[in-house]
Length: 349
Image (cartoon, rainbow, N blue to C red):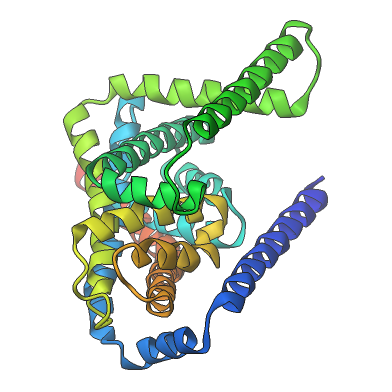
């Protein structure tokens, strides 16, 4: 069973890499020699010193995520060490680069080993974290579209109507088809559940929705909801500043403001959701988004690769360091506890 699971994970990884390569190849085919030259010049003339503050914001986002997760564990009666939380989060990101979502189990396993927190309980808090992240991302996406609605409508008009005035009939047809499909899926799921038909897909979707709802409910037990919300917002602020710092690497993007940084974050995050780490898809989306702000396609593509590489380097370095230090830190802490206990016993005698 385990061999079959490992094989499936390897197959998934190969498929994801294949999709990433295909996306990059299709995009590359559309680049003109001038745009390829722009991309090469961007890499050659970049000011890579701006990678350092971007790396700093990336590390800070890991610390904030660990702090937030720790807050979610408090209501369960556990107070794990902050360093163990940081190490486990860093290792989780590192593991997710290879096999999507395996990192969530890995970090809970680390807490089970070193903090004696049952795996099932910590996994429940991870579901809560995912719920918070999805809500925050959704709000960010909606606010971004609302604040930059003129730019969004212009882009949407170009995509749907090819530069022509939007056709109301077309909108009605699109919305009607979407609603009809959604209704059909819901009715089918209800029919399967009602008649107790064993359908793995439906059961998985229903279980996911239930877990999502349970995760949201568990937020009410957090001791300080304000700090939970603040930490969640600060995580995304760090992500935004990571991109903002990277803008200064290239002369062609140094002028971009917070509006471009927020738009890039909102849309490029979709790439990281669809593919592990957003490999291949992230720079393509970045090129498309930043082109709306007057950035040449080749320059935007180079910037997208630089932002993606910066994020990936943070994950790899933090993950490897955490894997090395985690057992050493806990062994030292364990030895200190034993020494303190022995001293107490000797004083008692």
